Length: 121
Image (cartoon, rainbow, N blue to C red; front, side):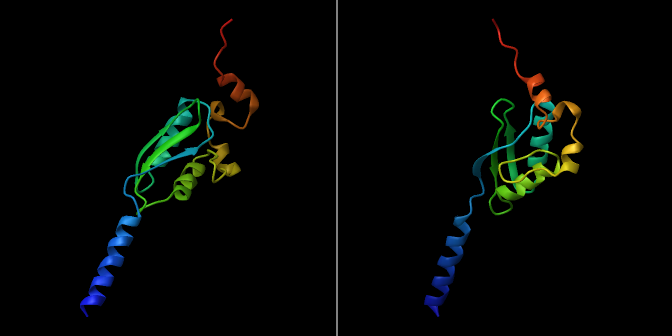
């Protein structure tokens, strides 16, 4: 009986430590401007288990700190896609993309060019 209790305790302990409550990850997310940054970060941080979300406009990299016991990258990516931004994992549907502001249409080459930094001579 003691052996069974010991085995159960070891299994529960192993499972508890297998998931990280402060997991760090990065994810590529499409966007072009500061408004996109706000929308992307807000969608990520509103996902249960996400503790930090910082998106870089220049690199399109979203840095995350999240609790693996409460969420995963695919769930976070879905929340971001739901507000109109494509991720490495999930592409936003046309309806969600259509709701982003005109200046945030990252699939439009003209909009992307308009957001490129001006080059100095």
